[in-house]
Structures are given as structure tokens and as C-alpha cells.
Image (cartoon, rainbow, N blue to C red):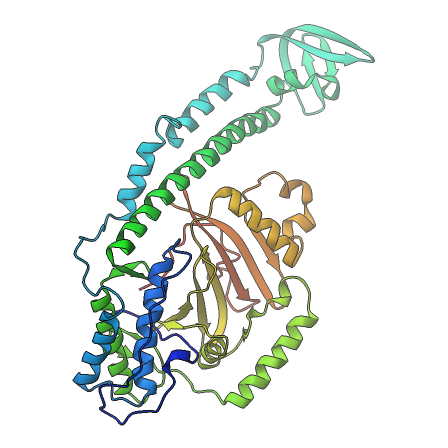
Length: 455
């Protein structure tokens, strides 16, 4: 069953006298306005909003949504503005199929798999950074004042401070770097790893960006073709206008038959949330906003304003509705869509009916976009833990996750890699400090692939 919610706020075109229950003709018409910006499923969002506004207009007019004539009137109003049943077949190629096509497109530019590249680089590094064995006859160059001297003989020992070659003992500090690699196993292993990782990461990053770009073009073309054919995409699922309208009508009928005022359901079951006192909630929001404004760094972000840490599920949902968010729900969590088209959705998690975690799922984000996001987040929250405590180590890996630890909030900005090290998005995870033990924390846990939980 589709999990969807109504657009919050009043519908300007739906003003008029309310009709009696069961009346099937309000005399009001909601007009579909084709969006100026049709990128990133803009047409789907416009049509989805139009359908929901049309249903809301009939309900606001006092009509009985359970009356069959009212349902027919809604379907008629929608059909008067948009195509209900497209004639062209839906392009329903899966993400996997599109990704395979994208891989074929970049094969010539990046012929090696990451596994093959890693193997070749490891072999090259072994040849490039040869280590001497004890009793090998070797030649080592070293500094003696401004001069560079050389000594040849059997390699007898190395203790970290000195090297014994034949009868000569040379301070390790004086040995030239290229010969240190051959003598010092730790130094040699580090140089091998640096050689491999630098070339591997450069190839991987370039390949990932090219693959992401090729995939996005294929996905955009698929979305545009389906929208132009008349289909509507809602939360990564395609519908005809007829099916989507029927789903919304059925949802409203289920909601009307329940005492629950929720706008969501899961598997045909109406979800029940606590009902907050609005005056008390508004005061609570203002109190938390004042606290948030007095704090700095990650602690200035106490949840997702106007919903703050420890708000009950009912409070968090109502607070978001004050900001005209259409909040969707499953039994376990809430989520909603934002106007930011780089963001797939934002998810709210709860512990014992208290807001404890907020996850922002960014999609269609390249590695370059991720670096820009990192700059924006550092500008907003300040240096992350590693930048603050060990700036030299922090600068080594440009694609590393950023982690902020505050008194009230902990957070992580991380790349979400799919198969074959291809970036399939970015996650920004915030948790109430101390809400989760280490094993359950998504912030403190090592990075891993995370799949957005959407029904």
C-alpha cells in the first residue's frame, strides 16, 4: 500500500462555500500548472501536488469522501487537467540495468576493473620498492656532511638506529631516502601502500565520477520520457494519474473511517501518534530555537528545526507541518521530501517515542559535489573532530567522512558507496548525544553502505 501524505497549508483556489456531506460537485476547479523547471522529476511533483490539492478541495468543501459520486467527481476534475492513462508503455528498466549500460559507456575510458587495477598496482609496488634480505650484497648511499658517500658489502643488520653493511655501521638517519626504503620494512611497506592507494584512489574517483555522470544522464532521460508520456513518479515508484488519484482517495477514506488524525498509513493500517497540546508545543519550539541560537558548532543543530531532540513523534510531526512539510510515515520512522532536489528524503528515527536521529539522504551527488558539501558543513559547524585534533592526518584522505562530537548532538557526513566503489549518494546523520550505544550509533560506527528505507 502506498505511504503518502497531503500537502500542508491552504489551497488558494479552493475557497468557496462548503457543501453538504455527500455532495459531489463543489463548483471549484483546481488548475494544473505545468512547472517551469521540469528537471529532477519536476513534472511529477507538480502533478502529485495538483492531485492532492484537488482531493483536499473536495474535503474542505465538506464533501463525504466515502461517497462514490464524490470519488467520481475528483477523478473527473483530475482528468480534465492531466492525462489519466498514458498510451505509451512505461520505461521500467531497473537501476541495475541502467548502471550496466553506464558501465559499457565508460569502458574505453576506464578499461580496468578496480580489482584488476589493485592487483596490478600491488605487483608494480613490489617491484618498485624492493627490500634487501639479510646477507644480500648491497650498496647503500648516505650523507657525510655535504657529501654523498656509498658503501658496498653484505647487509648484516638494521636495528632502527643504525645499519651494518660489511664492517661499516652507518647511522640510519644519514641514509638516502631511496635506500631507506630497501632497508626499513616499515618504511618500505608505508611507501608501497602510499604508491598503491594514491594511484588506486585517483583512478577510482575519476571512474566513479564518470560512471555517476553517465548513469545520471540515462536516469534523467528515462525520467523525462516517462513524465512526457504522462506517468508520475512518487518516492521512486511510477504511477498513472488514475492509479495515483485512486490511491489517495482510498487513503482518505481509510483516514476518515478512523478516529486517528494521522495523514499516513502502513500496510493498510492507520498509524496512531500522540496528540500534542498546540500552545505548549509552540512554546516548546520557541524555547528550543532560543537554546539552539545560543549554541555554536554542531550543538546549534538540535535535531531538525522546528523539530528538536526528545520531541515526541506527534510533536515532531506537527512541528514540521507548521513549516508546510508533508510528513510521511511507516511504523518505525517518519520521512519527508524537501525542495532541495539533491536530497532524496529526510528520515526521523525515534527511541521510546522521542526524536533521536535525523538522516539526510543526498542523491545524484558526485565526488566533486561531496567536496563542496564538506566545505559548506565545515563553514556551518566548524572543523570536525579529526581536523581539530590531528590536522595532518585529516588532510591525507580527501574523501574521508567528517565527524562532529558535541555535548547535545553528534553527526557524520559520509559518502555512501554502492557496489564496485561507485558513489550512490551522501548521508548526513545526526544523533542526540548519548541516545544510542556505540553498536547502534550510525555516527560512531565504521562507514558502510546504507540503503534508504522507503516503502
